[in-house]
Image (cartoon, rainbow, N blue to C red; front, side, top):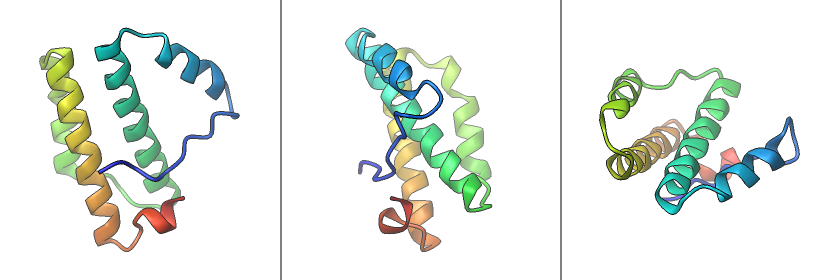
Length: 97
C-alpha cells in the first residue's frame, strides 16, 4: 500500500533532499524513501492535530537495531499501519492529498 500524500519538493530544500535520496545506493535509497513517506504521514497527522499511535512510535524506536534491508521492510510496514490508521479515522488517501 503506497501513500498518496505527496511530498512538497519545492519547499525548504525539498529538491535537494530528493536529489540526495536518489543518489544513495539502492538499499539505502529505498529506506530513505520509506522514511520520507513516514515523515510525510507524521506531518499530515500533525496538521490534523492527531497523534501518531504509541505502538507505531514504539516500533519506530526499535528500527536502529535492524540492518538496512530489515529496517526498510519494517518502515514500509509502519507506513502501511499509519495509512490504515488514517483510513480508520476517515482521513485516508482522498483527504490526505
